Image 1 (cartoon, rainbow, N blue to C red):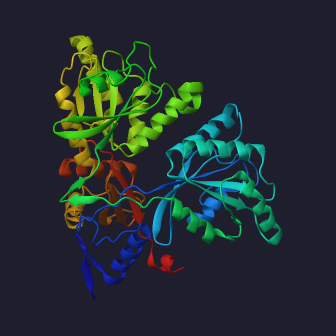
Image 2: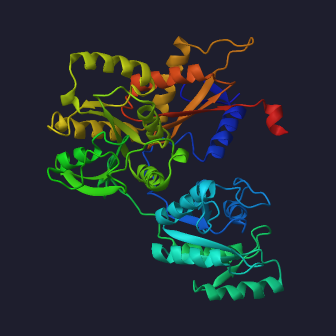
Length: 485
C-alpha cells in the first residue's frame, strides 16, 4: 500500500487524501504553508454596509459573502454590533462590515447601535448605503446621507427589495438623495447583486502590496497602541518617548478623548504611536463622551500591530487592567505590559505587585514586561526592545516539517490522556498563519483544552513566540464512511 510520510508517522494514501481535503476546507495547503515563507497580503479594503433598521443590510451581506452568516429576522434592530466578514468578487478580496440600523437622535441601546454604525463609517474605505426602495427615502435616510457626506468616504447606493419592473421605478426615485445612481437589487433573491458589486469594487482601493526583504516587511512605520485605564500615564509616556509635549497631560483622568497618532523616531526607526482614551468600564456600561472614547480606542487597537498596555504599578491591579489586557489578546495583537509610575513604589509594594502578577496575569506570562516611569524617564530605553521582541514573536512562522517533528516527539513523550477508553492522537499539524500565529492540528479525536494549553506552553518553550497570543484549533478526522455520507 502506498504511504505518505507527513512530519511524523506514515498515513496511507486514503488518509493522506482526507487530510488534504480538510486542509483545503481551511484554505491552505499543508504541504506548503510554513515552508515557502510566502508573503501575506496587505490589509484588505473595508466596506461598511449602513442604513436605517430593517432595510435588509444583513440579508445583503449574506448575499455578498455567499453564505447565511449574518443573523436575519423580519424585524428591525436584530444587528447591534459591527460584524466583519471577508468577501470576494471578480478575484478581489475585501472586508465587509455589517452594522446595526442607524436612527436619528437614538437613545439607550439604539443610541449605542447607531454609534457603532457611525464608527463603522469612519473606519471604512467605502460605504454601501442600503435603502428600502419600496418605502422610498425617509427623513432618517436623508440624515444618514449627511453623515456619510461629512465622512468624505466614497459611497454606493443600493436600492433594496426591488423584485420587478415596479421596483425599478421605485429605485429611480432614490436619485433624489444626491448620491448618484441607485443600484436596484433584491438581497433576498440576488437580483442585481453583480452590478452592485462591480460598482463597489470601483470605489474600494486595491489591497496594498507589501514588499519583503527576507523576513522584514518594508514600508510604513510599525503601529503601536498605548492602552490602559484612565490616568495610568499613557499621554505622559507618549510625551516622554517623543521628548516633547505632543499631547495634553492633566491630573484629571480622561483628558484624552480621541486617539492621537504621532510619528516618533526611536532606535533609528520611525514608529507610529497611538495614544488612546482610558477605558473606564465595559463599553456597554459607558455613556456619552466616554462611550465614544471607548469605541475609538477599540478601533485604534484594531489598526495597531502591537499594544503597549500601561498598568499603574503604584495601585493594586484592577479588574479593568486584566480586562484591557484580554481585549488586546482577543484582538490578536502583540502585547507588551508596561508597569508605569515605578518611581512611586517601595519594596513592600513591589512584593505585593509580584504576587498580584502571579495570581491575576498568569495567562499572559509570555508578554514582555517593562518597569518604567513616564515622569522620570526610568527604563524608557527598554520599551522599544520589548516592542520589537513582541513583533518578532507575532510574525514567527514554523516550517511544517519542523512543527511535525516537534509534535511527534511531544506526543510520544506526553500522550493525550485516555478518556472513555479512547486516546485521541495528533496526526498532523500546520501553521495556518501569523500575526498572530495560528495552528491547525488534525487529530483522531477531541483534544481537551488542558492538553491544548500544554501544547501551547511547549510551543512557546521550543519556538519562542514572545509577546504574542497563539491560536490552536483542532480538526477531528471523521470516519471514512461518515465522510462519504
